[in-house]
Image (cartoon, rainbow, N blue to C red; front, side):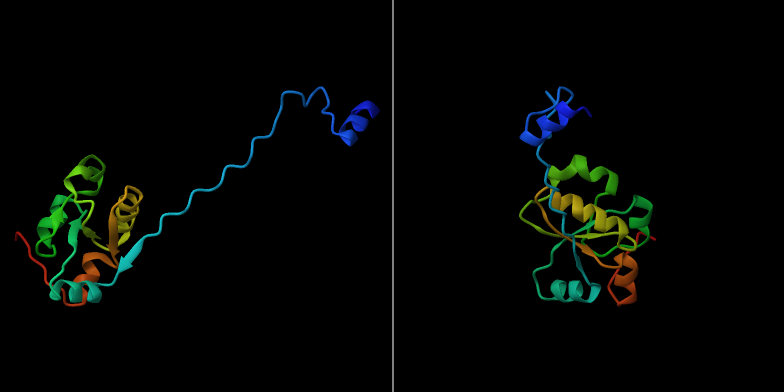
Length: 138
């Protein structure tokens, strides 16, 4: 940097290399999506108390046929973005999968799209371990 450039920088004049280059203000990070999980025992209590949430099972069809929570709506994970209109955006939704991983992701997606959704912690596996009722096609 030349002496002239140093003097310009000292007094706030940009150097010729800096002319036209302006720093844009920092873009704020978006708020992270908060995913709420519900324990199997708590969901069982909710179902017994008469105001059950909509259970959205996001597993594949072969998994759903093997075992599922009665009255759950089956909607495989990869179909949900194109089927959002089928869901009531006023409903309390609990998303179910096998172990709670897929349902966590789907819940985040639903919350991001304006739905009130929670993920079943531990999925259907924990539901069964805790004594939850299941039905099957077999």
